[in-house]
Length: 402
Image (cartoon, rainbow, N blue to C red):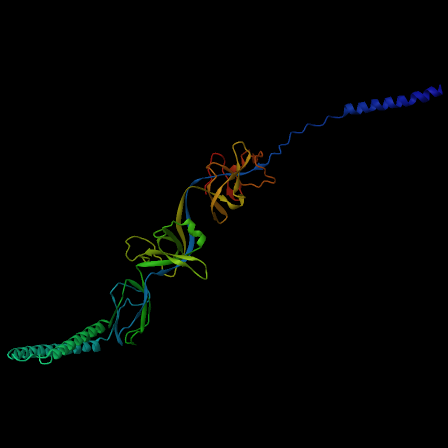
């Protein structure tokens, strides 16, 4: 009997354990089913806008007069008259009297020269009369030939030379008398004046400096690789100048007048010269803002025009390709033609169309053709309705404004 119990007892214990295990298993709650996780990468996009574009070239320069001159005295003497406009900052017209040198001595020189010329003319007339008398006397003599000296021709030539010399003296005296009046050679602004009333000036003394007000020039340095964006006919290309006047930002319109045609040996830049007419608005009848000599300005030279172009951030372009989210929400790398790099952006002329969705967010492991999804915020709106990295990114119904 004891032997049977020893055999049956292990089986009973095993059976009880199995029953208890089954009981615990039946009491255990089944695991909750988890929702399927979507591992599709989420991206943000911007709409591409393709439109006509005119390229420009940036430069800078200082406004200077096209014509400027230092006035010097051509005769010596005392200053007896000064124009009230002949002061620094004064505007004068062409031919306007600036200063007068005492003309007394030069008037006397002119009278003396005129008297010498009158005397020379009288001597010439007398010699002509004597020559005619000598000619008539020799005509009565038939057996001899008169010499040049007998006909007084050398004496006549000498008197004629004296008359010409006297005429030259008169012209010189008149010119010196005219030079006692210092006049403006063109419409100008006075930059400096070095004389005063009563001061004595000698020949070549610098009396002042004038700056022409009809045309102003700006020398614009341009790098050699930027000329490809300018029209081949540079002359008359439009230029927009930007600077300040009376503390306010102002812009003026100018034209390219010429290229200096050489590369500066120090800066390795070529120079274009822009011109602006009537910089001080002395002739215009409108309310244009003057542009003063010495002003520093930034210049935009309008260049070639592109029929279709788009602007894309430079960091999104790799090996001339940009990431695009296609209509099937898949990654597509579009091969583009880059025309120009402009700061942090590049200008693309081919490879993009208006409405293309440019991927602006980073992808860890991008593969051409991979499935992507647009991000959504808490309100259920697409991320292309939100601001990304400080930029407004539009949804499919909008177009980004550059």
